[in-house]
Length: 603
Image (cartoon, rainbow, N blue to C red; front, side, top):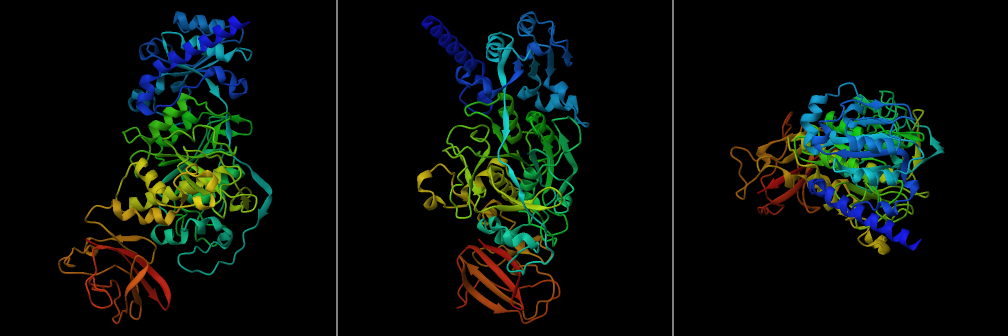
């Protein structure tokens, strides 16, 4: 018995060594991930009867370019002797090249090969075999073939979080009183999560744009919900469980969607972070369904669909069921989507997409993938007092924290039956980070600025509130801090070209960019030194100039300008002294109500 154990451990060692060698080029392409130790993977961690293999390019050219299926008591014959011998040994009855399994209508095989060939996506093949097959033994045997680059089990995925169906509330119709930019959605008063990340201030800068697409990869969104429909992507999405266009709505997924982009300021329900100003002009939501009940479909295909249809961000609410396991295929496609090469995601607004994952709900520091993969934005959950939510995973791999809620601080959002409900979980936290990222990208797009996904990710991580005083037992394990959307958006001027500044938000809630509000050290810009372009009646309006939250100048407008305020401020403080170069904030009020804010950059 002892000899058998020694032989088994030796076999595992050989397998791990071979895996490291075989994966060297692959990992150099996108990450130095530790190889999965198959000797430690429990049988409950992977699917029965399914194997993934990645063949070498020269072998792929010799394989049939079609899905092959035979009776379960037979085996698939590919024409490659070594592979067919194992197909026979392990009763492989279905052979599906990944590229042949893509079913969405506008898929173009030639474009796929052109764009993804360098990543080897076409080399992946799924094998289905007898349910009694020893999957680990089969994987080891395929991995040992010279023709195979990689072989792995299909690891089980699970959704993170649930919703309490008994916690429902109807929308009311009376709007809240406005102060600052507060949307008139009647349930906004219950959205503590928006205040804690400073959304009223963030919305003064940006409210969302419909050229930014967020793909939610989970169950289906209630796409015709009256508080979501106007912000749905025109193509709705795709069901990768049944491989058709029928989306089955789910309450929890719809709850996440509402946090990201419920239509704001439309006098019903709740407000979304990127929900726009009330006319369906917010961030667009794409529903990519990979879960339906106990069944799930291909995450790999969903990411390809998102990229091919212009998504900038992937919002994910799933993990593998066990820690320390992952499918290379999934990691590979995430890396490709995030890449700032020509095949990366981001649509027309970002050079390389952003993949967002909640940290998980096991209250564990174990390595749950894909959240702990360093190229995703990993989000831990906190409650209304900035304390780590009791369920939230944590670890030095977490990037940032965000409101996820708890049994004592539920989050209100959209659910099924055109209704609104409360919930909490990892999905809520990742939805907040996704919404803030989408808002920042919206702001970028107004000025024609295109950063990489990694740059936007870092901007969120670098502009946070310190929540470690509330979490002394988790120092360094809840990311850089708790998300603050306003701080992130306020960092935007640092990424503008020298000839563009933020100068105003006009009365329609959109920006006007102008070179003439940049002041050099002499405080001249040619023929004009005006501060902002503001529309509407102006006589009697008051103007305040701030620096680091301190008012340095305050005055009233004595002339009625019907279109533009010229020559309002020429860079002097209340004593008449020229101010130092830097970034200043102006605020214009009409009859005591703030109507305009903007930034002035003095160089």
